[in-house]
Length: 313
Image 1: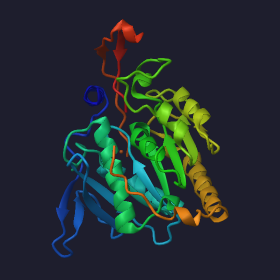
Image 2 (image 1 turned 90 degrees about the horizontal axis):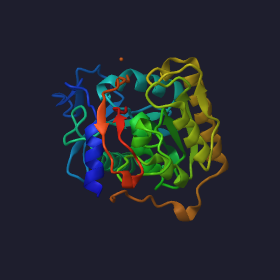
Image 3 (image 1 turned 90 degrees about the vertical axis):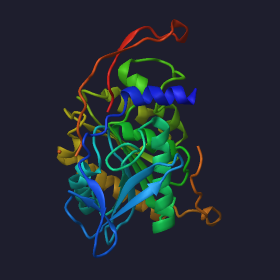
Image 4 (image 1 turned 135 degrees about the vertical axis):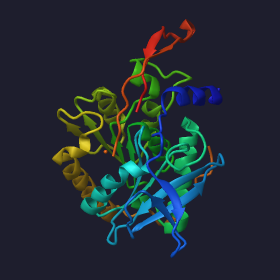
């Protein structure tokens, strides 16, 4: 059953840029990994992490000397790390945070093939790296998921109960719900965020454009309604799917959220008995996709009739 679901995801959800916008090489002087075809930054560290499925994923750690938190950023579809550089530089400077981001299996210089479950293994490997290499605790971490990246983000957030916060940017309720307004969760659906959001204990900020042409505004509204711990949402009036970062209220609202999470951290220190951090071992920046029609035929026993599918980002 899981393999069938993963195959469905791979067919109409994942579209890595071809060719990749960067490569990974070793600096001759320092012996450290660097991203080729990307401007050098002495405060960026490059990792190649082995996932549970055996893939080698590329992750970058953008360090801020006075960081208050670390954002673990899961990007949208049809993009790789080379296209996200400018955004990460802006977020690091304006929010005073570290940023850890990664390319999913089969994206950029990461090996393997993209699938729903591989993205889960990818983010787990990155989380474990933050713990082991940087000593970053859940309370110091904010998970950020953009569009399809909301899938791995909520996968982790539903399992980590002491995260400082979660940001959902143009997020999806589920894969099938982007294609068709089904009322129930189907076994072959992917990224069942509508179910996982109910298990998130952290403060959730939802950001969505009111004119999103890829993922309807209703997805963001419903996720915010279902969140147990809600932060003031940002509904970007007239915003689409790929341009929310260009609106001045985007960075302003994020800064307000980070400040609120810092106050929450000071006022609510973690209990002493919960200091041990668990490992997770089980289980130009953003390019928009245009629709590509493909017929999805589903047996009527599942109460879904023949529909026209669309790629999701």
